[in-house]
Amino acid sequence: MELNNIIAFLSLFQNSEGKYVPFKRSKEVIRRPTSEDLSRLAEGAKPLSSPRSIREVIDEAQDIFSYGFRVDHTRFFSCIPSPASPISWLGDAMTSAFNAFGGSWEAGTGVCAIENNLIQWIAQEIFGLPSSSGGQFVSGASMANLTALIVARDQILGNDPIQRSMGIAYISDQTHFCVAKALRIVGIPDSNIRVIRSDAQFRMDVFKLELAISEDILNGYKPFVIVATCGTTNTGSIDPLKESADISRTYNVWMHVDAAYGGSVAFSRTHKELVKGLENADSIAWDAHKWLFQTHGCGLVIFRNKAHPLKSFASSASYVADVEDTNKILDPWNYGIELTRPARHMRLWFTLQVLGLDVIDRMISRGFYLAKLMETELRNLEDWEIIAANGMGILNFRFVPKNKSISSSDLDQLNSHISKQLIEMGIAVMFTTRLKGIVTLRMCTINPGTTDDEIRLVVKALDYLAREPCQVQH
Image (cartoon, rainbow, N blue to C red):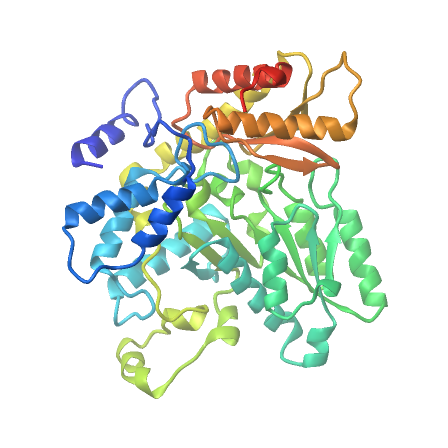
């Protein structure tokens, strides 16, 4: 984006009308390649013997990037969309241009100082953790959860292989799949992962959680970690954080919170109370590239005690002795998995400095408003059923015609058909999920650039597709 467009972007947050960021708009919400396109792309991956003009390669790159879902589109409502702010990708471009090394204080003193102090501010002022807390920026929640679970294993189970073989982890049926993957990587088999059924609000049932822990202890197992979720992917639900933490303290179990999505709400003064309880965690995973509008690759893992990761990751060698002797500070490589690290945090620092917290609050609040508007519009229509009400900018619903006898499987197929046709017609991207054993449409409304009229347009399109399926052109 040109500088004048960036300035125009900023001015929208500073006028008296309370307008929101006009995130980059594209005409197509999805662009799928044909078989010919795929062949051309495959052939284009190979370099030529002779050089090409930069202009020609840039044009080709733009074509390559154009295929797929436009997650920045104002009518992309699936997964957890990432409508990256132009401020973030400007900060990302600057970071890439300087190519700063984030693994060593001596090699990247400036960016390391910013990372260290930015994390302290987020941990203490945003999440409410004590002054002993710290962590590091990682690529995303998958790596943040993996890093935290390695430390939880080492802190609670130690290095004894027998203890580790008896270690038990507790997740809910709404926990993101990357957590189970991380547990397997750290040596916890599926047989040692307890999946706690969620309650009617799709939150981990803490009564069943404590019962499972008690039974495992009686059977000679060693409970070592509870993984609570702050903002589930399906419904945006928040597990009972305080109650989970109380149980963890009672049984000497590590309390980890996957706040990849919901952690951003702590940056909103308007809605911060919704995520109260994060301050009780032993570790937290959070993605700024979800609801804080950053480009992909900006995740964070935070520990209640910043010394805990050292047991798992502290390393040295003769070829880094001179660097270590110079800075007198433990380098970032001692606190996580990576040695070579980009300065992932600088785009977030840049965004926060340019926009300020008041604007961030308005951007996050817009997501809540849009989901509520969507829910209100649907409730005004017949035959639409809300399965999970507006939870942190996520809404689950489905079409259930009251005047027709239709089987459960046919209802599932009908709602899946609505989703597919909405995409095929280029109106919006809205995938389905399964809750309480049924297929539901799931909508995530966190793009601040989405207008009220676009929400109403999508509602009308949904209702049309639901009632007139035979009229849809395949």
